[in-house]
Length: 189
Picture 1 (cartoon, rainbow, N blue to C red):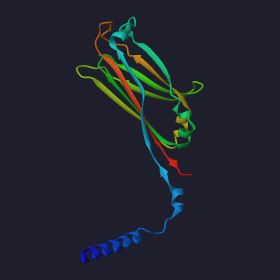
Picture 2 (cartoon, helix red, strand yellow; picture 1 turned 135 degrees about the vertical axis):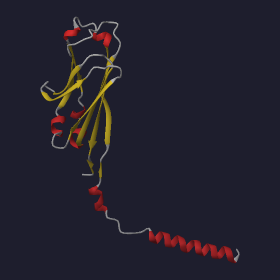
Picture 3 (spheres, rainbow, N blue to C red; picture 1 turned 180 degrees about the vertical axis):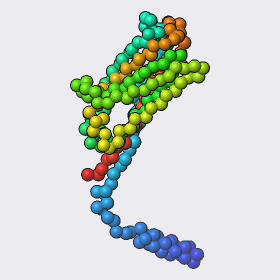
Picture 4 (cartoon, one colour; picture 1 turned 120 degrees about the horizontal axis):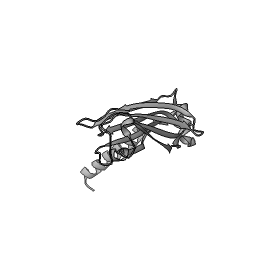
């Protein structure tokens, strides 16, 4: 072994000892108690595509008409979600290419079918371009207990009286896309 390789070995050994010594410090294991994760989960909730031709099957639809649908949405009954949910945000986006107005009401229901909240949304008629209506509803910390009671979500869709009267050949549709964004807080406790 030559002198340069001995010097290199000694320097390498000293640097290694220095690095090992500098990585050691006091560790505060009590910090684990302060640990929290705050994930945000986004899921699709409701989706439908109502064709104008389907609305055209409603007799005398120039006088209006109503469609109602209820969907079970029991994600809030899960103990993990119930314990850790801090805030929620629902987004409802309607795209209307039918030349008629619609009034919609999103209804949040508890397990017994009792109404917890109504969310009215007016969707105007389409002329030459699609009419897009986006509604965002936020449940903050003070309202989250109301949301945790929700078991079902219902949508009441009312075709407003007007013209043109739709038939089974009418073009266009009313599209609903909706999602929920859920803010969780998971503690180490």
